Length: 283
Image: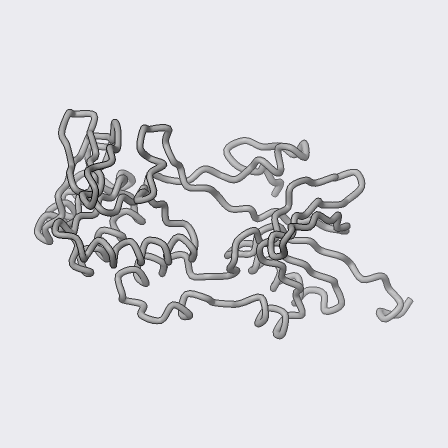
């Protein structure tokens, strides 16, 4: 049978950032006739995650530089159908369908889409501990372009306050990149880290070099300490962080949580797929 008479394979990709967009582009190279659809629940696909802190700090001045691809460019270059603001809520592995909510219209619409092959790339969600005050409006996580916009605006507002203070909870890679960029903006930065050192994957002597550099730039470090509570201050005074040691960090206009992520496995688990720390795959 000739290629033109063969049934087109139908691929559905859940998640359109690094993993999902890369998989979809690779599928196109392997099969020029396949029907490929990406469903991404956010507003953006294929953006430069590692550049997000550096756009906040102004190192990457142009916001568009973060956007490696757009729905329009993926469609034009690879003939991939990209649906942003679309949330996949269920998978029927027997019927080979997914249930999708289209959040791009009002009222939202729900539809069922069939597939021959399904690729899951749902990513991870930032950890937000159940600590009093972690749901206050000035507390942020950095995971996507929308988060970046919100933090950038909050930092601009913080620079107008007398204290100009920002607090970063967590001293991993993202936390330290945020510290670097907030100092560059002119904010007074405090880092609170539960572990006894920054960058816990590295040996302590290396961490000490990083800590010395941070302090030389005016960054205040609370190591081996955690946040017990975040308390809203008086009008115009930001928030105060009560630490487990009893210490207080006061008058913070911006608090950024950078304490890790947890794999987004709810969709796969509900579909009966094997889930451990993440979605289990074969070789």
